[in-house]
Image (cartoon, rainbow, N blue to C red):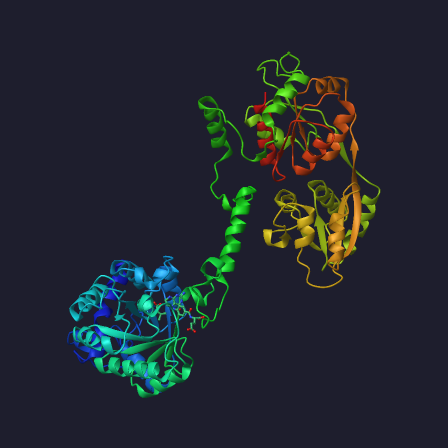
Length: 624
Ligand SMILES: Nc1nc(=O)c2c([nH]1)NC[C@@H]1CN(c3ccc(C(=O)N[C@@H](CCC(=O)O)C(=O)O)cc3)CN21
Ligand SMILES: CC(C)C(=O)C(=O)O
C-alpha cells in the first residue's frame, strides 16, 4: 500500500462499522466527505473546496438506505489485488474476501482448510486494491465456533491485521449470541445461512437447503435471530427463491443471495465462477450450477499460454518489438571482439540442427575432403571460407554480419533476378490501379522492382500496401512509398501464405495486385481468390542461373560451407558441383530443396531472416 493510500484507509476505516452499531453518532453533511465525522474537524478548520475527491467508501448506512429504496446491492468475492481492482473499477458495492479462497485459489476441496492467517493475508491484498467497496472478510471454519470470545478475537484480528470493514460468519440461531458479542465489540457482522459450506463434512456435501418447510422455517428463524443480534446483512445461499423472497420481505436488514433467486436485496457471486476462469475440466466441478458465466476467461488464458509456449518454442517470441534494448554498432563491435578473445560462441540457437548430426558429420568427413588440406581456407587465417551464392549486392548485409563475427566469406553467385517483359506493362498500369485494392509484395526482389516501377511511373498514388515481412516492408519506408508503419500490412509470420490468409479484406471483389516472380507458386493468389478477391498477378521478374568464372568453379570444387538463399540456387549448385558441402540455408524451403538434392548436412534458420541464417552458418562451422 502506498503511504497515501494507507493514510486514507486508516482515516476512513474505523468509522464505518461504528456508524451502524450506533456506538458513535455522526452527522452527515452535504460535502463529499460523508465518511468523515464532522466532529473530527477542528473548529474553524475547513475542508478545502476543491481538494481532490477521496474515494468514498460504501458504508452500512448506504446498504440500509438501498434496502429501503429497493436498490439492489451488488457484491462479489475477491481474493487478491487484481480481482479487488477489477471489483472497484466495476463499482461493486461490497467485496467479500470469502473462505471460498480455499477452493478457488488454493485448490482445496472444501473451505474448511483455510486458516485465519490465510484470510488475513488475502484480506490485506484485497484492501490494497479496493477503495470504494465495503470489504467483508470471512471468519474461517474453526476460528469462531468454539466460543464468543474466540470469535471476537478472530474478528479483531481480521479487522486489525486484515484491515477489513466487517466480518462474515456462517450459522443461524446457534450463532446469534456470537454475532451479538462481536457487534457489541464494535465490529460489523454479516450473517450467512442456507448452505453453510464450512459445515460441509457434517452436511455430507454441498447441497441446497430449505426445500422442505422444516428447513425453510429453520432458515427463516436463523435470519430473524441474526437481525436481532445486530448483523447488518445476511447471505442466503442455495435456497429456493420463494423462501428467500419471504425472508427478504420480513427483514429490515438486506439479504444477499447466492443461488437464492432474484428476490433478495442483493446478489453475490464468486469471482472465478462469474468470469469463467475455472472452466477447465480440472476445476469445473467446483462451479455451482446457479452461477452465470459472464466471460470465458479460462479459455482466453489457456489460449494465451499456449500461444506463448508455441512462440517461444518456434523462436517467434520475442521478436524485434519485444527486444527494445539496443547497443550501438560501434559498441557491439568492441564487445564481439573482446568476447571472441574471452570465449568464442559455442552455438547459435536460432538455427535448426539436423537429426543425427554426429553421424552425419562423421560420414561427411569420410566422403569429402576434410582431413586432407583441400578445404578452401583463408590463406592467412586457415579458417574455412563460407561461400555466398546470391548476387553480391544482395549478400552485402549477410557478408557484413559474418565478417563482424570473424567468419571468412567468398562469393560464387548462382542465380540472378531478371526483369521480365511484363515489367514494363506493370509500370504502365501502375497509375491506374484501384486505390482501394491491395498491392501485395512477398519478396524483397519484388519490393525493389515495385519501387523501381513506381519511380518510372512518376510516383503515382498506390493501392494499400502489404509486405510479407519487416525487411521487405522496410524498403518501402526507405524509399518513402509509405510514411509510417501503420500504412502497411505485415502478417504475423513472414510467409506468402500467412499474408494471403491474414490480409484485411473488408468487401467482396477487392482487387489485389501481386507483382512477383514468374517462378513463384500460385499459393498466394489461390488463397486470396478463395477469400473473394480479384487477383491480378504480374510476373515482373524471374530467376536465371549465373555463369561462373574459372576461379569460381575451382573454388566451388573445394568449398566446405555454402550459404543458400533460394531453392533455385541449390539446384544450380548441385548441377555444377559434384561434392556436397555443408549447407546453411536462409529458411526451411531452401533447406528442403537441399535435402531433396542429397545434401547430408543442412542447417537452416527456423524463420526466414538474416539472424537465423547467420546462426545456421555458425552451426555449420561448428562441424569442422
Ligand atoms: N467456486 C465456488 N463457487 C461457489 O459459489 C462456492 C465455492 N466455490 N465454494 C464455497 C461455496 C460452496 N458453494 C457451493 C458448492 C457446490 C454447490 C453445488 O454443487 N450445488 C449443486 C446443487 C445441489 C443441490 O441441488 O442440492 C449444483 O449442482 O449446483 C453449491 C454451492 C458455494 N460456494
Ligand atoms: C459464496 C460466498 C457467499 C462465500 O461465502 C464465499 O465465497 O466464501
